Length: 182
Image 1: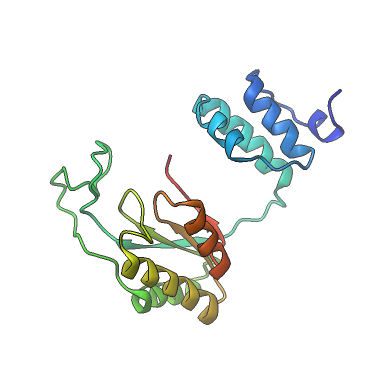
Image 2: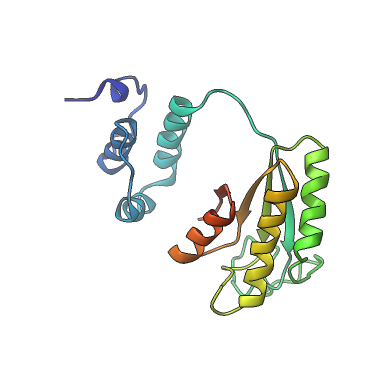
């Protein structure tokens, strides 16, 4: 038997894995890591359609303006053929290491003055690493703390792959949303 919430969904993908996940989310369940891994194996077009249904169901119709800072540019070791940030291609972009907490905060304050409600810290790399580059990790954490303490924008980030512990630490210090380009 379908739940009342699920019965309101207009579109079903016909994909049992995706449709089951949508039903469970609409019934108030939380998906776990195993669910996430199973969903990653599904066709992106079907995932996008299901995600749009969930967004429509849970959204209040408002939009947050978001601004980002490219806090670390170029020299990424990954060989993604589509990405101008890869060290494997000569794309003519400026490259630089992490800007540092104060410069990231300055960018967040400019974004707030321009009307943004959210501010994303974005870096070009496979993933920041608390274990392998602890100084850079601490600078990123300090930037998030400064944004939290000195602005009214919500701190977001796209920092590549994280461990579960790293993700929890970022959430604990005030990171609001995390984006990862799959």
